[in-house]
Image 1 (spheres, rainbow, N blue to C red):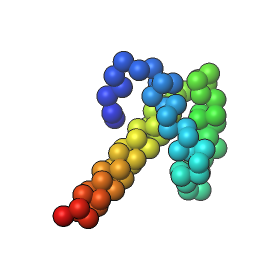
Image 2: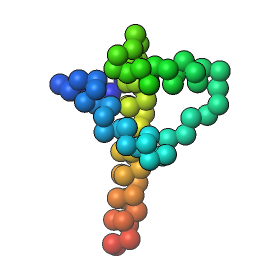
Image 3: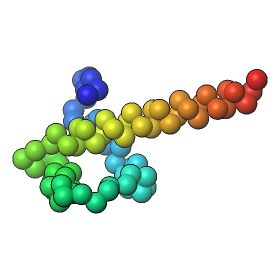
Length: 79
């Protein structure tokens, strides 16, 4: 898991919601979908929120890696 720092869980996940709303996250059909979506949609008032953390962290890691790869490609083109 990523270090949360001083931000609240809501502050950490808020920037990731646009990625989901923009349709850039795909949820594969699985037996756990109903429970997973319930936790995400009930956040922050639900009983559980661990999957919210994991989802936000996964999106952050993916976007950071994608941005690094894009920057590397741009820099390669400058040589």
